[in-house]
Image (cartoon, rainbow, N blue to C red):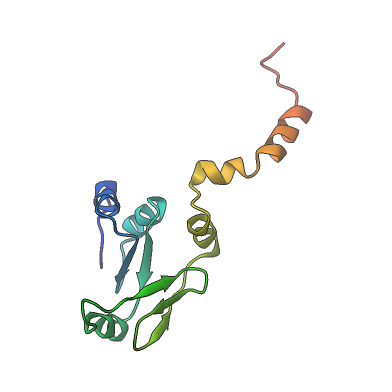
Length: 119
């Protein structure tokens, strides 16, 4: 299992420039911390990780989030991701950004609801 429940672990990876982490498993908190910091944690079985580890350092590996594929020079692998997280990562959205997508609906709701604490 990869990860730490301290958000600093995800911050360190992001600050170092990591965009994707491929591992056999992730702790739940660390998995969410990576996603919340704009990284893509990908769970892959040992066989896939070993194939990727055998690539030459000069080989290019591409992660296609839209197609949910890891593309190496010798093989392609698929991965799973929740549609909510996929949407957030593809659109560079955080929780505030998601909320702002509904700004007009929120304003309409607030307009129709009386504010009892105001005159």
